[in-house]
Length: 280
Image 1 (cartoon, helix red, strand yellow):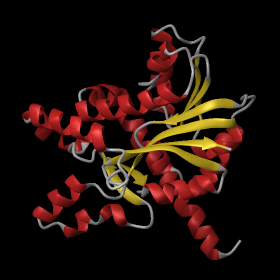
Image 2 (cartoon, helix red, strand yellow):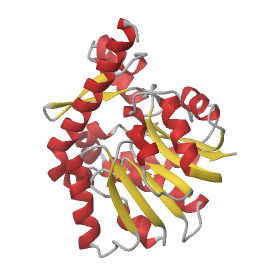
Image 3 (cartoon, one colour):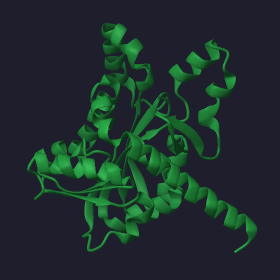
């Protein structure tokens, strides 16, 4: 192994460690803070609705980056048999507590495992679907490798539904250019991992266009089923104070986004994009 390979390996290890530590720090309050953010809740709901539309009741679902288990009750209520994984031990503890309190342990198991470690998922059957809500796939060290690992866990014809943090967020560009902060306005266009602060920690994040994301999964045998924007007209979640002050206006923006967010001209833009891919 050359010196560059050693350096790259060290960088990946640091990014994974920092990201895990950041999510461990916020795990006890993460669900409450997200639940108070209506924009995040709306994004989450649209991801789950797409899964519901594509995957029948009783299916085996792999939840990639489950966090504190926010989605597990919904998935169980839909009759899915769920294996949920997360890289953060503290998030896994929160998720297991939530699953136990909801009495859904027969339907949902939670494993401490990163997406980059899916080959270590012992005894897992072929899943009918995988879901990744609100950006866990932005934090994997190598998206192409992750795509192959996910493909290996899905049966032929299985689907992945993922909400992914995108590169072109019109609200963010407008906000930071108006403030004269061009460096911040350009941050999503970085080619490499970006250090994103999270309450005193650092989450290492890579931003994707839908085309780049889709190419990584096409190489692993996936084809696109559906694509739409999330947070195209609606301000991004970190502008929640603005959204709360202008609720009626933002609700109308959400209606417009739901109406045209899948149009080819605009679906590649937004704070996130929501994509469904089917394994060959």
